[in-house]
Each structure stands twice: as C-alpha cells, then as structure tokens.
Image (tube, rainbow, N blue to C red; front, side, top):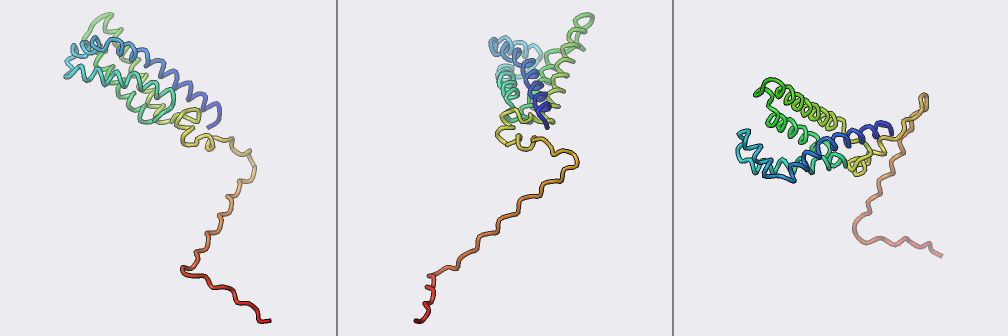
Length: 176
C-alpha cells in the first residue's frame, strides 16, 4: 500500500477514535450514572458491566488511533458499539419523534461498528504502531515500474561446514 493508502487508514482510525472516545470519557466521569442507565435496561450486574464498558470505551479508541493490536481492538470495539447501541437506543420501545431519534442514534452506532469492522479487516497500515513493530513499511515500498525485470533473490550463503570432533592433526612437514 502506498503513502496515500496509509494516510487514509490513519485518518480513518483517528476519525473512528474521535467518534468513540468522548462517550467513553463521559461515562468514565460518571460511572455510577452509567451503571444506573444500564440497570434501567434490565442489565444484570450493571456496575461490573459499566466498569468493563468504560475500560473498553476509553482505552479501545486510544489503541485504535495508535494502531495497537488493530484486529483485536477493531472487532472488540465493533461488538461493544453494537451491544451498547442495542441496549441504549431501543427505538422499537418508543413511538413518534422519540422513536425516530433513537433509531438514528442506533443506526449511527451500527455505522460505527461497520467502520470498525472494515478497519479490523483492512489492518492499520504502515503508519501505526503495528506497522512499525512488524515492519510493514518494507512491504509498502513502491512497486517496480511496469516492464522492469523482477529482481532475482540474492543467492543463499553456503552452510558452514561442520568440523570433526576430536584433536586436530598437525600437517605433515616435508622432509628436507
């Protein structure tokens, strides 16, 4: 992938993180209120779920922006986003204008989850921690121009010879 593709992947990761991080920070600033909201949906153990959700919602977008563990983070955030959308934006329980607003919020959550899945499948690109750590830059070098002969691989070095075990015999001297 060229520089343009790596820049687009970086911009996508940053935009997804920017869309998710403010909600995570807001929940982290009021964890008991978030737990009460979850309890109102009938969630069992709302305090534990709220704590886990806050950890995912704060550290996940930061890891996503940096490109750390991109596939795991992308799939985890996508699942988290869909589950929270289903729990918190239950548009089917409402009617009128409230149902329309809740449906739009749910569809926004579903769209974010789709973007996260695309990011998890595409990978983070070379401009990420993962790309730096695993040497993706070498793989994203410019391709050879059309019509150019492909480079032949460098010949492999011969394997070193094993020496026989035991004392070495001294070379015989010529008789004078």
